Length: 192
Ligand SMILES: [Zn+2]
Image (cartoon, rainbow, N blue to C red; front, side, top):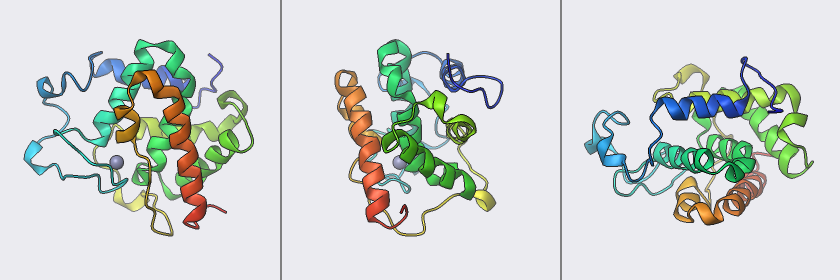
């Protein structure tokens, strides 16, 4: 693994460790068997307050995130877009970041999609992705350090659509998802 180890482990092992700690089960198929994700299912709103994705059948964005991790763990070829997936997911849930972390994450998106850099080439900035991957598992982010966008954003593509596309189209769909985020951030004036 070539990923820089911001916290002593590479991003890939970090994420897979977390995924494994939750049980290596297909998240969608096993949703109803898992009672740990939400304390009160009746409180789940119909759509994500952060990215706007529709939440159907009690599935939330965190479930979609788990599903994508599951596909990547199941098929290593899908892991080649892991960095884009974590970044895309986190950018659409900016409260996972601190304000500075959100800035760094937008810079990473430009590095990957515009400058053509690979994860092992971005050095210390990868820390932002690692932190986001870890913090996305925390239900409650610290209110005093949440990142947010200066201008309102409407996301045309969310994790829900990527998951709906299935594992066969996963890599291309993740790339398209990341590309749509870059475009949206620019058009909304949040990224120059
Ligand atoms: Zn969401």
